[in-house]
Structure formats: C-alpha cells, structure tokens
Image (tube, rainbow, N blue to C red):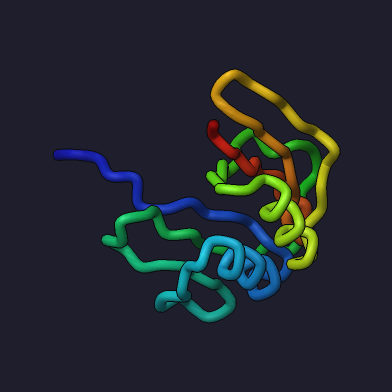
Length: 117
C-alpha cells in the first residue's frame, strides 16, 4: 500500500476567519466539510487539502511544524499578509538560494514566505 500526503490540519478558535485568510492568500476554494470545520480544496487535488479544525482553547507555545509559501515578490506578499490580518514576526533569513520571512496568520500560526532567487 502506498502512502499519500492528503492534507494539513490547523487547530483554530475561529476556523472561518483563519480559513478565509488562507483562502485569499493561497487562492484555494473551499470544499465540502463537516459543520464547524472548513476545508480548502478537496481530496485528490494536486495540492494537499488544508483543514481548519475548531478547538476550544488557544495554542500555547511554538508549533513545531509550519507551512512554507513560495512567492514571487516577498515585499508584496508581506503586504498581502498584513492586509489580511496577519502579522510580521520580524524574523528574516537571507540564504544563497533566497529569502525567508516568518509571518503569522490571524490566530498567530506561524508560516514562512519564501522567495527563491
């Protein structure tokens, strides 16, 4: 039996709000989901489905996994994140292969914007 990466699940106090942020940022359309949950994409899509799961308590501490989002223009992407209600963590890394900027969505889930050279 083969294994296939089918999705990423993100715990949220407000799944609708967080999913809207990611929907606009990534241009992903919602798919069918159970009540209270939001799925961006569908099983079998070329990209893994993003699943926004309702939880009753906020996250404490740093999450040890995050998404990397490849962009063409790091400055423009940062502006988009801020306009959508996200924030800049102030962390930036310049590597030979490109630039990585750590951002956070409206519920403070950190992710990286990556612009390759």
